[in-house]
Amino acid sequence: MTQLPSTLPAADVTPSAPKRRRRWGWLLLVPGMLWLIVFFLLPTVQLFFTSLYDPSGSFETGYTLTWHIQNYSVALSDNLSLFARSFTYAGITTFVCLLLGYPLAYAIAFKSGKWKSFMLVLVIAPFFTSFLLRTLAWGAILADQAPVTRLLKDLSLLPQDGRLLATPVAVIAGLIYNFLPFMTLPLFASLDKVDPGLIEAAGDLYASPFAGFRKVTFPLSLPGVVSGTLLTFIPASGDYINAELLGSPGQYMIGNRIQAAFLTEHDYPLAASLSIALMVIVIALVMVYIRQSGAVDLV
Amino acid sequence: MATVTERRTPEASRGTAQMSAQPRWRPRRWIADHIILLIGVAVLLYTFVPISYIFALSFNQPSGKSALAEFHSFTVNNWTTICQPTGLCDSVKLSFEVSITATILSTVLGTLMAFGLVRHTFRGRGLANIIVFLPMATPEVVMGSSLLAMFVAFGFSGVLGFITIVIAHVMFCLSFVVVTVKARLAGMDSRLEQAAMDLYANEWQTFRLITLPLATPGIIAAALLAFSLSFDDFIVTNFTSGQSVTFPLFVYGSELKGLPPQLFVVGSLMFLISFVFVIAVEVWRRRRPSY
Image (tube, rainbow over all chains, first blue to last red; front, top):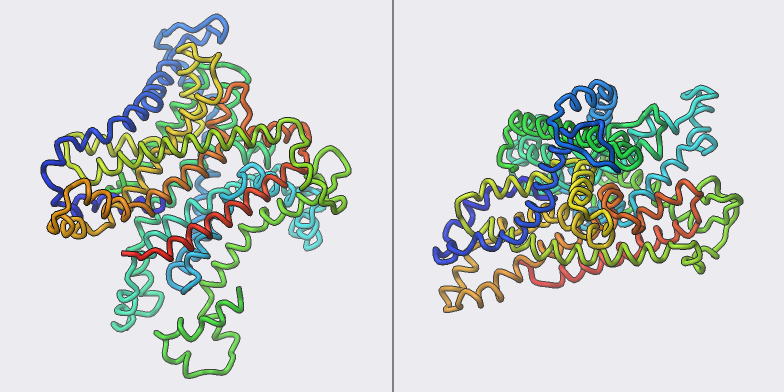
């Protein structure tokens, strides 16, 4: 995960694998590919058909495939605000994660000396304990009677009857917290590959530290920026745990809706069309983004 | 951490000559030189706020039903009565069974795929790369719901449980394993293998004595990643678990009923064990000769 961007150069690095091995090489892929085809591609196709079922059927009586394309217009028009909110929250989360993760990754790559691997362990340390427990702990920290809320009220940064919990701030803060390592690790992976000699050379050529960063370090770290933003944005846009535990129905995201439609309402055609719509939008955004950023070799 | 950075100063300032010429402690200068490290440390501290809260709550003797409501009084009882809440230890056990199985399967399948994709050229390799990438570009809620829809459509709704959870976990861990191992293989010096062949090692010997040891750190990293993704997964598991309860599902379920403080003991223990484990792996890795 941490080294997404370095996947393509493989072809150039190992040009001379003995010819004999090539003939059976694709066999290595068969078991894993089958797994992905049967349990990822096939379900996605199946989900697509489910999204076109006749919505008048039910979980109990069964559905018929009537190519009911209207499911999409209904699902989208009823949930437009949820889609908009999900992508707004995910966008803000990704941006703030980049702002927080970049200096952290930079510090680890260039300034941490012999503490490098220890700091890296600290970056992934949140993964060591349950994501739900951490989110619940955030909820407790931001709770109405907790010190943070009281301090903000004492400083008049929050009105006396104001709350942090059940606001967009709490949900976005939770998303930022949970997805920060997904940003930091790929950033670190590409910053770590930057030769410090290049930055020194920029300095020798009278570039100010900032110009050196802008013209040398940052462009070289772009693959990390691209994979970090993707690894943050994609899960954040489909997340519903933060909205559920830290927010109220006013902050619910599209994931909450899909989850409820599937697991509580058992409205499969609606849930499926929402899922497919989410997937298509996310993949379209990812494609545009990858193309725009010129990091086509990511895939 | 402050002392740490201070001690490092001479080494860090090798590039900036004017620093070493000023042995006197000048706070503003020091801050300017270390601003990025300070921001990095601050961000790290921030990530530890909820974790320390989990530790604190594990010593909480709650007054009401939920350990989360407020810190009432200090106790160590929670640490000795971990299994008291009904179903808690069973859920931890199931989580371990699921994630160990999923880790082994996804690491083996994913490593094979990574070797196939990096070391061999064949038609359709680009397509294979895209199929590997797709699950990472798909929100979990979509993967979970599509698997559930398929299981239900094929009449598997009765058998949802251990097997379906493992199937789902292997599916989303695979891509991450492939990408991690691929990155390691791509960074390897293929001349080492050629040298082995030149020295009359056959292909199997070359693989066993050169390729595999070189790839091992990547494979271990991939396995650790798969384990933590699987152990902590809630969204996909929630769709594919049926009546089975893994640890994240147990936490989610008790959120509605009131959280027993023992949950936070389990959270703290998980953190401590993983921390020690990762440090041990790191130390072991450093002892080995690196290439």
